[in-house]
Image (tube, rainbow, N blue to C red; front, side):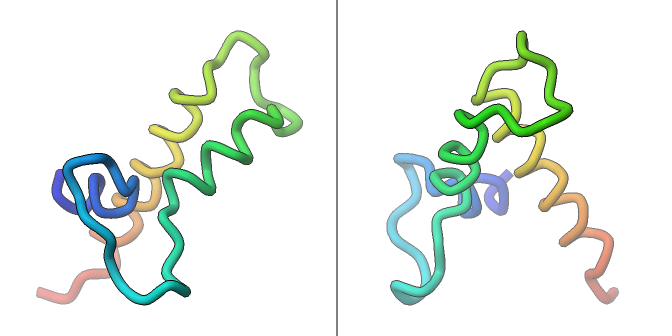
Length: 66
């Protein structure tokens, strides 16, 4: 879950990368508040962010070389 927390930029993780590297949790949260088309209205922004970060973590795991 270290990768998840790094992407999320949670409070236990310090700044990472250069200023060009966004904290995706913040960016995803701003987008989730807008309730994109096709997203159920009863789904919380936190659930949307959690799902997006998990999808990104899964993708990163899938492209790793052994």
